[in-house]
Length: 208
Image (cartoon, rainbow, N blue to C red; front, side, top):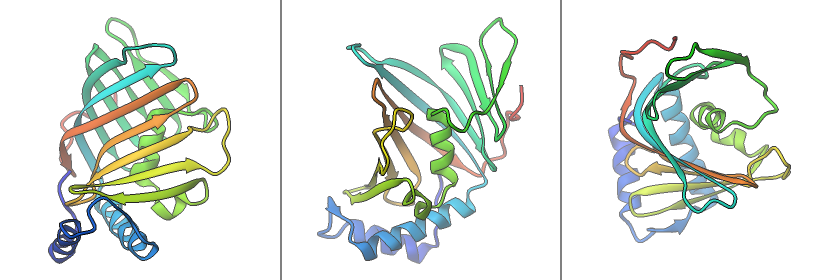
């Protein structure tokens, strides 16, 4: 994901991350500064394309299920995932429905249920919701490391539907998201993003 933060801001952020504050818990003042930078990145990001590797580890299973593919994101709240492993599978999420397809089968659409937890909807929320909005649902902590920022979100009101913990890792240079992990009661889900492009002309239309 390319940088959309002004050069002087980037220089300040880079200098800060290279200081003695490596791997330090962000202070309240610093949290506000970081949130402002994240919001600026969100405002300037209209679309994304990224390769990803996803792992899903169900309860009582020793080996995670790994899948790979391409993710495309377009404002507002539209996400397309094309899997290369397993090949021929994919999905599109819009504000109103989710469409899923598998090789040799016709796409199937179902209405979006806002009460049903979805890892992909969490991606959309993190991409679009202001960090200050997280405070109404989560206890939030930020930890600056050598070349990244780790944001940990813990629900204020734990429930069967809510994740137990969400961790979001961002690149230090531009605060673009590189990894999201979600811990549920019976499953651990994680996705890593690489070869990230910001505001590209999407070659694949978000339709199927």
